[in-house]
Length: 506
Ligand SMILES: Nc1ncnc2c1ncn2[C@@H]1O[C@H](COP(=O)(O)OP(=O)(O)OP(=O)(O)O)[C@@H](O)[C@H]1O
Ligand SMILES: [Mg+2]
Image (tube, rainbow, N blue to C red; front, side, top):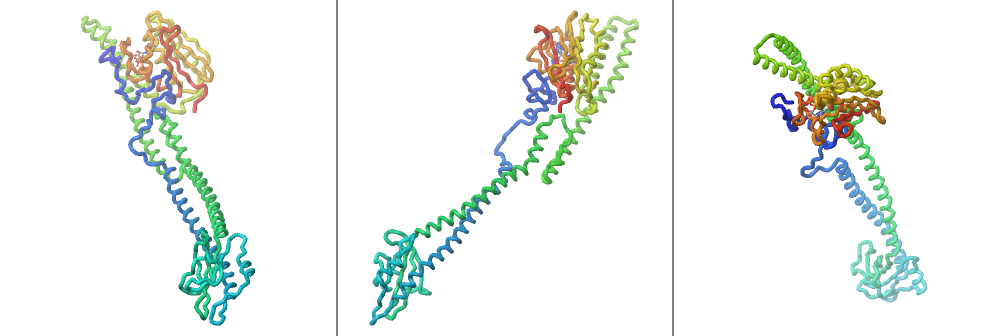
C-alpha cells in the first residue's frame, strides 16, 4: 500500500510507461501478450502518415522494367525497319527485272516507238506464285503503248538513273511499282511493272514475328532474372527485419549483420551502436536502483534495531505510540528496499543470462517451505506444499524471488485460518508452479493491472508496496514463462500459475 495514502493505488497506470500492460487477457508472457514490450504489435504500431515512399523493390522494378521495356520496343522497331528496308530493296530489284526484259522489246521504227512482244511472252512475264503483276509501256505524256490500261500514269519527269520505285493503286489494291525510263528518239518511254503486296506483306509479318518473339522471350527472361535478383538482393534486409521483429524489447544484443550486403552493414553498425548505448543506459539505471536499494537497507536495519531497543525502554504512552508507528514505517521502508532490489535483479542487466541452469521448481519450493511455514503460523494458516518434480531451465535465485512473492501475497491477503497450497508439477511440455489460496481473490478486471509497478487493488489490506507481482512478471519474462491469474479452487480465492518450458525456450 502506498504509505502516503493507504488504500489507494500507489501509482496510476500512466505514471509508469515502462511497465504499462495493454493486454486484456489474463495470460502474461513477454512474447505472447499483445501490446507487451516484447511483441511486435505492441512495440511497433503500424502508423501510416501521409504518402509512403515506394518500397525499394518497387523502385528497383520501376527503374529497371520501364527502361528495359522502352529499349525493347526501340530495338524491335529499329531491327524491323532495317530488315524491311533490305527486303524491299531485294524485291524492288527483282521487280525491275521484267521491266528490263520489256525494255529489250521497245524500238523505233519509222519515227515511231514500237513495242514488239508476243502476248504469250507478255503473259509469261506476269506469272508470279503470290502476286498479281501488271505492266504498262507508255510515253511520258501518259499515252499507253502497251500493257494494262488500269496502271497509273508514270511520273512525267525522268529521274536520275532512269529508274524509280513507288507505291500506287491498281484495281483498288496497293501495288509496288518499278518504273524504267527508256530514252528513244521520239521521246522517253516509261516501262512500269507493278506487283501487289502479298509476298511483301507476308515478309513484313515474318520479319515482325521473327524479331519480336525472340525479343519478347529475352525481355521476359530478363524480367524474371531481374525479379529474382531483386528478391535475392533484398533477402538480407528481410532477414534483418525478421531478426529485429522477433526481438523482445529487453533483448538488446547487437544484431548479426555479417550476412548483410556492404551497403547495409553501416546501418547495422549504427543500429548496434544505438542498442549498445541503450544497454548502457538501462544497465546504469538498473545499477543505480540496485545500489540505492542496497545502500538504504543498512541504515534502515540500524534504524529498526534502534527502534526495537527504544521500545524496550520504559517510556510514556504517547512516545510508545510514536515508536510503534516508527517501527511500522521502518519495516515498510525496509520491505520496499528489498522489493526494489529484487526487481532490479530481475531486470535486464540485473542478472547474468548464463545463470540460467537446469533446475527443478520442486527444489525451489522445498527451500521456500522452511522460510514460509513459520510465517504462516501467526495467522493460523494451513500452508501446504504438494510438490512433484518440475524440471526447467532457470535462475534459482530469481525463481526463489518469484515464489517468495506469490507465497507472501497468499499469506498477507488470506484471512486468519485460511488454506494455502503451493504446487509444482509437469503439465504437457511445461513445468508449472502454482500458489492458491482461499482468500478474497483478485477481481477479474484487476488481473491485468496488478502486474503494474506500484499498483495495488483499491482497498487491499496490509502494507505492500505494489511491486510483488511486477517482480513475478519480470522474472517470468527472463524465463519466457507465462503468468496466469485465476479464481482459486471452487471459485474462491486466487490461484496464480507460472508456466515454464521444461527445456529452455529459444
Ligand atoms: N493472493 C492474493 N489474494 C488477493 N489479492 C492479491 C493476491 N495477490 C495479490 N493481490 C492483489 O494484487 C495487488 C498487487 O500485488 P503485489 O504483490 O504486486 O503488491 P503488494 O502485495 O501490494 O506489494 P508487495 O508485494 O510489493 O509488498 C495487491 O495489492 C493485492 O491487492
Ligand atoms: Mg505482494
